[in-house]
Amino acid sequence: MTQALKGIRILDFTHVQSGPTCTQLLAWFGADVIKVERPGVGDITRGQLMDVPNADALYFTMLNHNKRSITLDTKNKTGKDVLERLIKNCDVLVENFGPGVLDRMGFTWEKIQTLNPRMIVASIKGFGPGPYEDCKVYENVAQCTGGAASTTGFRDGLPLVTGAQIGDSGTGLHLALGIVTALFQRTATGKGQMVTCAMQDGVLNLCRVKLRDQQRLAHGPLREYSQFGEGIEFGEAVPRAGNDSGGGQPGRILKCKGWEKDPDAYIYFITQAPVWEKICDIIGEPTWKTDPNYAKPPARLPRLNEIFSRIEQWTMTKTKFEAMDILNEFDIPCGPILSMKELAEDKSLRKSGTVVEVDHPARGKYLSVGNPIKMSDSPTEVKRSPLLGEHTDEILMQVLGYSSAEVAGIKASGATEAPSRKPA
Ligand code: COA
Image 1 (cartoon, rainbow, N blue to C red):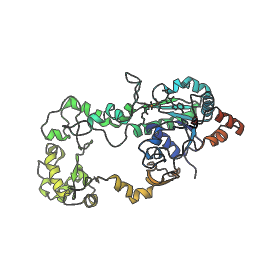
Image 2 (cartoon, rainbow, N blue to C red; image 1 turned 120 degrees about the horizontal axis):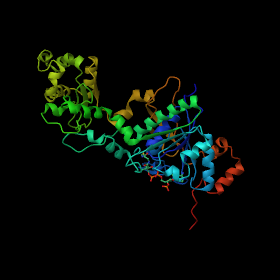
Image 3 (cartoon, helix red, strand yellow; image 1 turned 120 degrees about the vertical axis):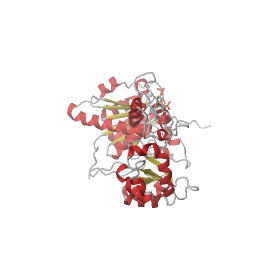
Image 4 (cartoon, helix red, strand yellow; image 1 turned 45 degrees about the vertical axis):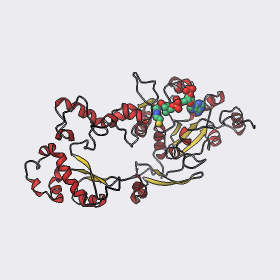
C-alpha cells in the first residue's frame, strides 16, 4: 500500500519542537523529509534533557521519526550551493528559525521563488505582524500570549501553563494543514506559496471558546462557571475556571477511591442534561429528578458546588475505573485521569499504534507517541530518528546527483562537517 504524501520531498529546516512536529507528521504520511542540520551540532534537542549518555535525547528522537539527516553549514559558500540545489529538488521548505534568519542566510522568499517557483515555504514564528514580530518565542511564551494561561488555573491562583504543548506541537499541526492545503492548491495553480503560522495565533485558535466567553460577558455573568454559583462577581475579562467544563454541560474533576495516596485517582464527570435522571439514580438522589431546584439545567447552575460534592461522595466509593465502567453503562460522559505511566502501559493504545516502541542504535528501545491520525489507505510505520548527518552522502548523491568526486570536494570545503579539533 502506498502513502498519501509519497513523492513529496520536504526540506526540513526545523528545530526544537514546533517545526519538527509538523515535518514528522508529513513524514508519517509518506513524504521524504530531509532534515538539514548544522555540522557537529545538529538540532539542539539532540543534546537537551539527555538520559542515556552519548545517545540522542528523547526530546529529539520523539520528534524526528522517519526523517533523513544531512549536515550542512549554510553560512559556508559551498553549503549555500548545496542548499540551492536542495531547494530546486524539494517541494516544501519548512522552517522555524528566529525572525529574519532565513533572509540573513540569503534565502529570501523572492530568491527561493526564483530557484523553484513551485516551492511552498512554510514558517512558524512566535508572533505574526505587529509589535512582537521580531521576538523569539518558546512554548510557554505562546501559551501566555495566546490566551491559554490567563484562562487556565483557578480563579484565586496564578495563571497556569498546560502540560499539552499547544504552542509548539499545536502550531506544528496547524502548519502541517497549511502545507498540505498549499500542495493541494498547487495541483491547480502550479505555483508555490508562503504558509505562515504564528504560535500566538495557533494558541488563540485553540482558545476559541474563551474568546466566545469574553463576548458573552458583555451580556451577563457566565452562569456555567463555578464562580457564578459561588456568588462571586465577574470582572472585565474571562476568569480562570478551574476544571469547569468549557461547554454547556457542567463538568468537574472528582475524587475517586484511593485519592489520598494516588495523585491521579480522579475522574472527570460531566452532568450532561439528557442523562441527569440516570445520574440522580446512580448517586442515590432520586428526588432530584423532579425537585424544581435540580430537575432542569438552569436551576442547577447556581448549585453546581453542592451537586458535584454529592456526586463526589459517590465517586469516592469507587476506583476511577469502576466509576468509568458504571457510568459508561448509562452513557454518562466521564473520563478517568490517566497518568503517563498508565498511558504508556495501555494495551489498546499500543495495539492502535498510538503508543509505539522504537529501537534506536544508541539508546535501545524507547516509547513514543505514534501518528494519532489514522488513514485507511496511508498506513504509518514509525521509524527511528536519524543520527546526525546519517544520510549526508546518500542525499548528496541520490537526491542531488553529485558525483563521488564532487561529494569529496563538498566535504573538503567544510560545508558538511564540523571543523575537526587539532590534536593537542
Ligand atoms: N548552518 C549554519 N548556520 C545555521 C544553520 C546551519 N545549518 N542552522 C541554523 N543556523 C544559524 C542561523 O543562521 C542563525 O544564525 P544568525 O542568527 O546569525 O542569523 C542561528 O543559527 C540561530 O538561529 P535561531 O533560529 O535564531 O536559533 P536560536 O537558538 O537563537 O532561537 C528559537 C531558537 C526557537 C527561540 C527561535 O528559532 C524562534 O523563535 N523560532 C520561531 C518560533 C519557534 O518555533 N519557537 C518554538 C521552538 S519549539
